[in-house]
Picture 1: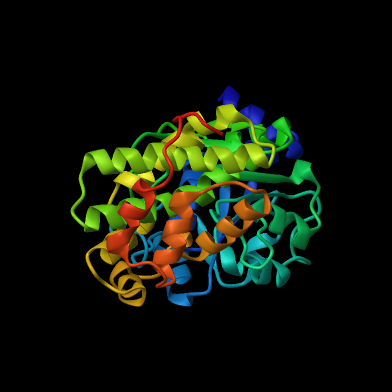
Picture 2: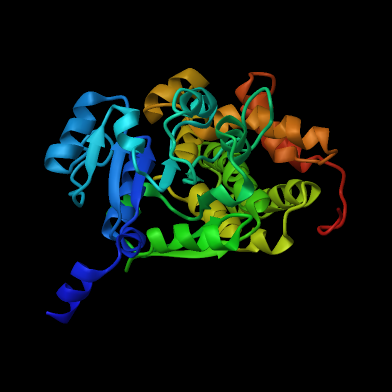
Amino acid sequence: MEQAERAATEPAAEQEKAQPRVAVLGAGSMGTTFAMVLADAGCDVTLWGRDAAVLDAVDRTHRNEKYLPGVQLPAMHGTTDPAVALKGASIVVVSVPSQVARTTLESMKDLVEPGAVVVSLMKGVELGTDKRMSQVMAEVLDLPDERVAVVSGPNLAPEIAARQPTATVVASRSEATAQLVADACSTGYFRPYTNTDVVGVELCGAVKNIIALAAGMAQGQGFGWNTLATLITRGLVEITRLGLALGADAATFAGLAGMGDLTATCASPLSRNHRLGKHVGEGLTLQEAIVATGGTAEGVKSSQSVLELARAHDVEMPITAGVVEVLAGNLPLSNLAATLLARPKKSEVAG
């Protein structure tokens, strides 16, 4: 009774703080899953996408059988109208393919509420500009640092959708903004940690997809755990090198967004990048692998832009370079391992 009385007399601003209005842009597996997390955490969630049938089902039956079959979602709204999704939203979550983020957001920039915090779930680097997704969002929407956040970690969507326990990292240059987003997505099964190292967290998310392609290729060729462990640890070295060159915090790479996400993505068949790499390793062409995987993977499109970014900062990334060459058809996959192993011998901690 006392709680009901407090709710009835609580100022409107406090009620809004307790249940923020959130728009999630992108109704694929990760966008829908994160919308579920937000709704479970008590947010008023609207999910936007382009597939009218999917969004109608989300709105009416709270299911997305196309991307999360068998999962019963909490109550949330679904719409194909960005104006409906963004109206009144104090938090906007972006979960679209990284290479279409710019055009998607440009079409919506006048609809985002003044003062809204915009959160990236995207894990890629933009082709042509070599910009991280937070940079693309800030540029298109004219956002200051304190209105930008990214979420990244060992967060395979099917496991989260099954409400299996996991943790993630919410990063923003503003600790207050990171905490705001963390509060909005904190549940009994989803544990957010905050971080102010946006560069490091974002690069971990982008580059681990490329290392996962290499791991999948290795598995597809029949290589075992030693090879996988080598790719994960040396892949982490590549991510760390690039991050430090761009001003990231070294501690980030040993954490959830770094080693945590890298391990999950390289080892799990639930990872689209791992699956696509495995198909290539089994002898499929890239296009055949994309079909077999059910669509392309972020690492395929980001690999070239990540390599360009590394070269622009004089950072050595041999695994990434090898993946780029294999995907481009310039290096036979059978030669990739030999090429990496034939590199000049040096100290493990050199560079």
